[in-house]
Length: 394
Image 1 (cartoon, rainbow, N blue to C red):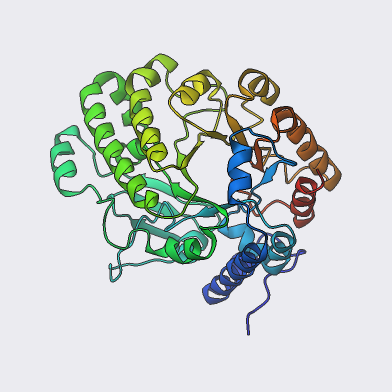
Image 2 (spheres, rainbow, N blue to C red; image 1 turned 90 degrees about the horizontal axis):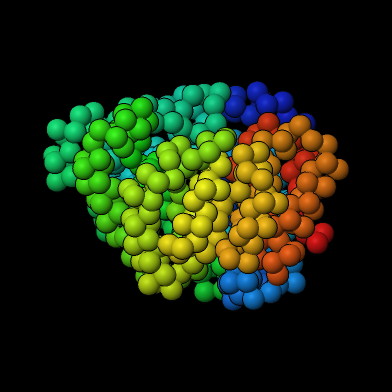
């Protein structure tokens, strides 16, 4: 018998005190229920693909299952009820939590996602990156970096780079793809593509200096990361996914973290090759980059991005982005996750409708309605309900 998840009236501190076994059961039940509802919903693979190619759709698409582990544990069945009533159009398929990396069977210190992301834990992943999750935090952060000095680069590239073709790397994703891949628009996930992997390997402060002082070494490491990404795309390409989601957070709240000229010189052609590989397999490119990246949107469109995510409404002016780039690329995200916890349910619904009217309706509804980032457990359940309902009241 499955345990029920915490009620909608749970205080934020309550769910963190649950035994790990109960947390695991809540997450497993949530996934099982949402997966079953997704399986029972009508096929949509071609309809979503046509919508994202801006060929017209009767409504905007949805991706509401963009949730932290914490919010799932906190609201449990009540949250599953909503996603079962309103199944997503876009299904995200992951083989492993990005901060854990691939954990080969039998590897010492194996952690489950819930164990790593709901308890005080630290670990070293397959890249040699040290991660830490605080018991009262959401998500893990890199805290130690394997390439402390560029004199270590040759050894790292020769002996420590993970193998994208390692047997079993995508094994955890295959059961979901077997059920949904032929009929639903499924998106395979490749996190920490270039920039995020660079600063995880080197440390943010050092990487920002390296762009000026060690451009040759940065170039060599970027080339190795590009080859890794191309290899992993090839593995995803053999499956029935419809798209690949790649992430690199380039923006601050105000602007790009480096100059657009430097980005174009050091990274643009790497992305062109990576995205070309996705297209070579007949898949769409969903590219995620938080913050204000307005200055490089034309470049991202040029090198092959099909869907731009997450369009954060705080750092970016969504109306200006829509005016400049609507019809040239499809949009995803846009719902202000940073304000969800402070709004009333009515204000949440109004925000969703405004965003649809800005990013979707003028462009044939070629827009995936989604939060601009993973939703935190501090958001009230009634606001999540209002957001999900508003997406389906188009």
